[in-house]
Length: 191
Image 1 (cartoon, rainbow, N blue to C red):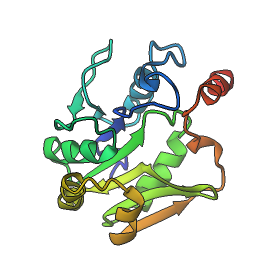
Image 2: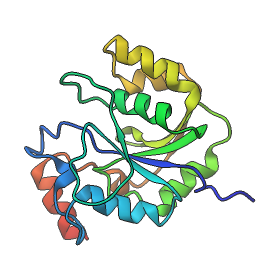
Image 3: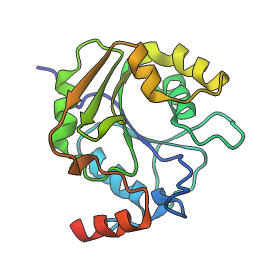
Image 4: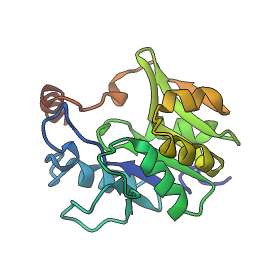
């Protein structure tokens, strides 16, 4: 049986972090100098290849980067998806947001094992869909390029218009985003 983790993983860390007040990817976390390094270190234990999608090299550790195409003032993951599929040749890629450090191997494995040949497989909970935690197929590159040129960055709209499998998780806790300073402080206490 094929190892479900035998695909690339891309950590998206190019957001604006406006609600946090500073770049959350660079906040110290879990004994590492940054949340990005924490995520890279833990996900590298699962996946053979892990990349970080970002606008620029802002990290103080060595990591394979996928730099967004030049987009003036755009902080949407659309640019990262375009860059990802232009630079990685694999058909399917697992993506995760840098600000979800509690998505564990169990949740990731569930998503990987559900995937057959959909355009995308994403996590969903009672609180909503988590498009930045799932698998995406390179067939979606033309849609992402179109979204980028049309300045339409609604991932939820894309998911509704392609072959998507939503994987329901009962526990909200692993999918909690660190968007605000108090959420970051709470996450530090949970470590």
